[in-house]
Length: 476
Image 1 (tube, rainbow, N blue to C red):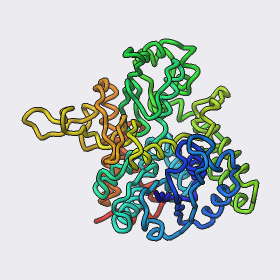
Image 2 (tube, helix red, strand yellow):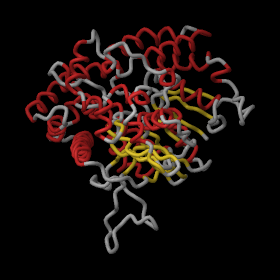
Image 3 (spheres, helix red, strand yellow):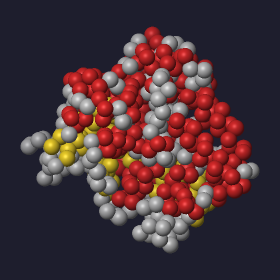
Image 4 (spheres, rainbow, N blue to C red):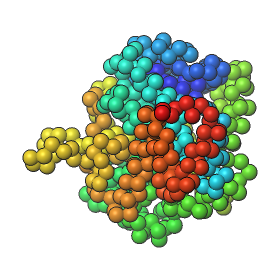
């Protein structure tokens, strides 16, 4: 199988290569093509791959012992990268880390939450990113029409929804945040989750906005016991982010990004008190790191891995105001690459898998009953949200794609928040795909973390000043 990574000079590409070269996914991919518009970034990441020690990136020593790592090729030509490709993994960042700084700062300067995927910053990011991803999807239709697109480009839910009209079921959105939550909760209560299975797991939401509401063991829901146990909760990231009494009353374990909704004022204050934004920290790190990687020779991997650990330690730092440290498991190497490769393996026919993914909210027709008797209306996996909207739920992945599994109806407050944010997402997609400036203003103003039509107009004007090319998106 030939895999192309769009954003091949990205910081986390070595994680994908390491998983392909030395883990359970060894042998899945025979050729890895790294595409990026920046040749200097490609050179730096290529240096890291060459310097990767055998214990991390050499031939796998497990069941597939003797399988060689995939051959690696780099290119700045998108048609060349796509021709003959079976799978495309997209993780691009238009505007780079400098753009992320502006996404955060424009909102923060107005006293709002400044975060890259949540709130105003996420809308700005989507407006820049969706047109670039649509170009990639259309090029795929021309040069590799049968290829699948595994999308990690943020904001993942909005980007995936925007691509559906072009690629249909052949685009699947991924994020490691929800799956990480499930595994942390299972570990906290001592439940070993079978690899690639989510039996007894209930999770509903949108990307970076979801809740684990059921966790079964032996047919019994053990989540209430975890939510009532302050000691066990404190062993996991989400249990440290939210007060135990709040979680017990909620009856669910929120995705870590809900910190920005449930503790908005504290998050804003913490961000404003920091010497630099998260984007500024990453930008300065990478501006220093990438030139050094390209000429570091055998030390390139060591330099990259140290930077990776530093970057992971700073994740959600605004929520750790008392010097708390992230768990070692969280620093061991992300997780998104394992989600992506598990999807790829299932699509390749190596066995079905269950993962939490971003996919249309439509249950399949057939014995499970996707429509009511006498009705042609599709039944949604998450009741209360449109059946054609992209949501984040447990899915079964087969060679035919991702099929959502039915979930319970969210509580009233949760559903209201989901409906509001989904409305904002759809306004953003409309703005980016149809050049509708009024839809962009509405998206900013309607977001729960803004909630002001006047601020919506002010935000868009601020982002247009920060990104002058954005004005060229609008029609009429």
